[in-house]
Image 1 (cartoon, rainbow, N blue to C red):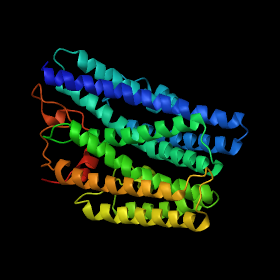
Image 2 (cartoon, helix red, strand yellow; image 1 turned 180 degrees about the vertical axis):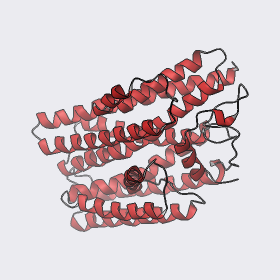
Image 3 (cartoon, rainbow, N blue to C red; image 1 turned 60 degrees about the vertical axis):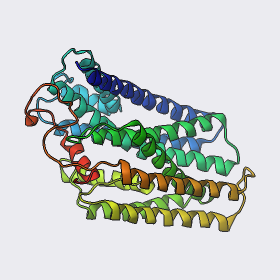
Image 4 (cartoon, helix red, strand yellow; image 1 turned 120 degrees about the horizontal axis):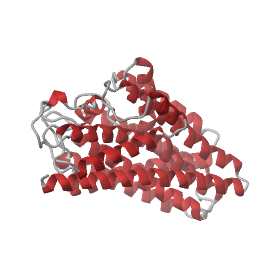
Length: 383
């Protein structure tokens, strides 16, 4: 095996271990925070944490199950029987099973002296689904949890040590999921290298810096109007859902599950940009950016008009400039990335699912993750 291929497979395996460990650790932290709320008598806060965790987990299992059932017959030969898979998903272990399966396949191809194109493509097929599920879990659970914890801290006027742990883990998990998703999409490119260190850092930073002000604005509004934040979310979510529908998504295998996907994308768009349609995305990205920025400014203005001091005694004037600087810096890094680091390509079936060329094999014989290939074609423009 060429040294470059061996190194790539090794780092893929390391990143897979990190992603799985991060999921388990975040789950443990969320349960720990909920238990601390219960012990301190804050049952409503504990219920909110567990509700977000439960809803995200159920949706994650549904997506995983639908995709497994839609995959080509005979693709997953080493999988357990259908009843066992159904039981795993019912027990909320479907995503974790996928992570373990991806690690096993990654270790298998890394240990081979001469890995076949099929084994390499199948490893990529599995990792692409895992990356997409990780992104869903991030915006269905981690990001709302982060906004909730920040709102609780702002409302109570102090942060407990376990809340700081939750905040830090959420930020790391969110940024990692965005970077991993982008890295996974680039493996779908027919003739482009994987995401380099420089572009990885820029992509990581602009996502983190643009997400932080949005989460802060939602947290400020939630701390001030805890009874109205749900109505605010539902109102914007319906608008975003309508926008996603207008773009004519075709990601899932049937119309019913497609609406579930659109609803999930609308939730992602409430916090961050996510492209789902073909063609140049600049116009849609600008519209979404202006929309979220206007909404965030309105939420912050609402807070300012109802109280200039945070309960902790920290001047709001110290927090708002921090969010503003973060937004401006993130916007600059985003422009830098899309101007010089975002690839364009010619979509031809030369290579599928990022399988590295080693043995000659017809592209149509390899496992093709059409779901993610479609998203990659939307994400990366024609060159």
